Image (cartoon, rainbow, N blue to C red; front, side, top):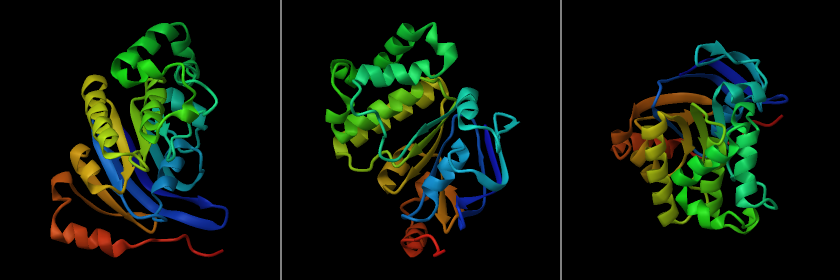
Length: 243
């Protein structure tokens, strides 16, 4: 589904990724665990084409998308749920969902059907359809952001810190939603997260990221092991280097 080879990127003269390598199989949930400043979000933005790669390759569903525009990656089936949700606060829940649907031309003719399919999968949103996105709780906004992304029928979802600022009961609901989506849609997920319990509940495989490199890969059931926790704690905050 996704192969990353020697991927490097950054912001202007500030390098962030230093040769990331990763292989993700169809139907997997692969987690990337790291502290702030380690390059997690930059990696997802580079995969989506928001931050340009400076070297390396991104192979998605058999095609080299390294230089492909973001919109073309989306049409090929790459979806992105950014950190902080970034829903449209002045639009209603329904308008946010419809926007996610009609951004993909192949869905426009069946917009009503796709909307109903999303509401069947995200039943919590049905009573909220007329509310503006900005008045929803953080958890409701996160579920809306995931549903909006699914409106484009992605094959692989890039999910950036979905538990940030969300109460535990909604986190549990998100776990169940993602498990269901993977099972029903054969969705593949690359998850960036810091909450270990959330990762352990979802991921089949976990990689630590340190200063822009994926340093360790292990199975999710090893998260609680002493050696892994020592390594994660040892990473510490990793601010970008000065200009």
